[in-house]
Length: 272
Ligand SMILES: [Zn+2]
Image 1 (cartoon, protein in one colour):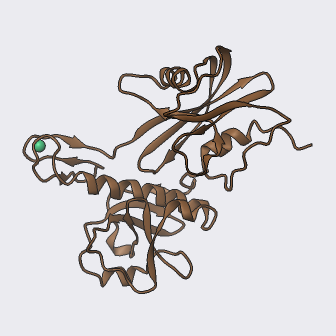
Image 2 (cartoon, helix red, strand yellow):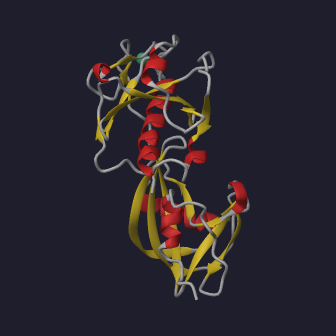
Image 3 (spheres, rainbow, N blue to C red):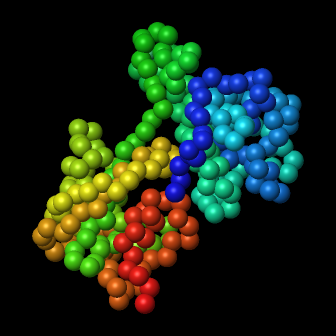
């Protein structure tokens, strides 16, 4: 699963003396050496101009990491390219993906909070805190995190999987949706299940959570038992939804980085 390794230590102040390694981010893309998908050498980046002020990410396995957003003027060093995080699933160690997911979210926070959203004054970063604050009106902006629920509905020996209308590839997976203002996660589960497939559920059980840096979701996964109703999909959200049991061709996940894969695979019937 995509998460930072247990020996990762978050840091809020860049450690310049240690020769930090930099995640140069552009949206969900990272600047990497094309030959081996490694981060650019610190000495190479130090020679570049036009570097925005980096944000400390943390330390892992003896290295310090920092993140910055690369604007359109960022000079691309020879042999390097911006590569999307999804393209790295399974290609680099999971621990690296987890640290990269943090870096991407910090760079995106910095990119999108350069000015105060209330009075448009340039923001200043507070020392020792992951916070931009407006010097004029005091508005604070912390890294944005958007909670979303995921739920796998169980009915006897079957589970409900759906093809999301906007999902690339159209793979069947669990239901998911963002938590709305004023809702608990559980309320979001009941609302989304009813909106997307017209069912009612009960007996919600927490499964796990995962930071999902596209761009800043926190996926909170549950299982729930079917209560009543017939499947009635919302075509704007769901292309198709049906019950999957032992005799069905279950979806294959190319990798197990996402909590969706973990949730579905945990309920996959044993191969016969
Ligand atoms: Zn302001």
